[in-house]
Length: 170
Image 1 (cartoon, helix red, strand yellow):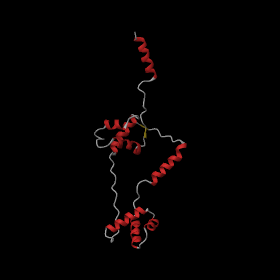
Image 2 (cartoon, helix red, strand yellow; image 1 turned 45 degrees about the horizontal axis):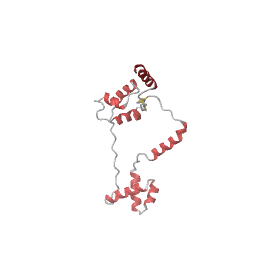
Image 3 (cartoon, helix red, strand yellow; image 1 turned 180 degrees about the vertical axis):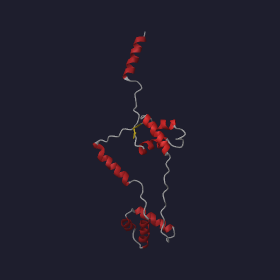
Image 4 (cartoon, helix red, strand yellow; image 1 turned 45 degrees about the vertical axis):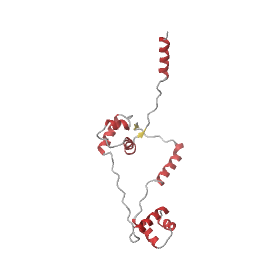
């Protein structure tokens, strides 16, 4: 379920949240090296610098320096290796579909991503339920909520059943 209310964060958990976000930022997506950094790694390698010194000068890890030196050696040791361009991620849910989903969530805030996928089979046929949920949370800003587990029988149900048994027992 997705609710349009904003999430309240307790002040007790703020330091742990900051630590968690810092870990995500540090361990996040790899940064692409610039062509200047790659050429400086190659020129330092030609000047017989050690891997640790090259890493310190360029400002990258030892593993990155080793990888680029290996690419340089595998290409014959003549030409500076070119970096590969990362492919752009294509959005699976287009703007029209997002508007339809937003309209349905605004009409029924307790709707689940599974129900949205079932209601819109043509729009979401090649999209997983998890992608729909991610779209709602990340792109549209809705908060994730999980349905509360309710007991099969409440106290009133049990009381009424016992009364029924007493009334109709011989």
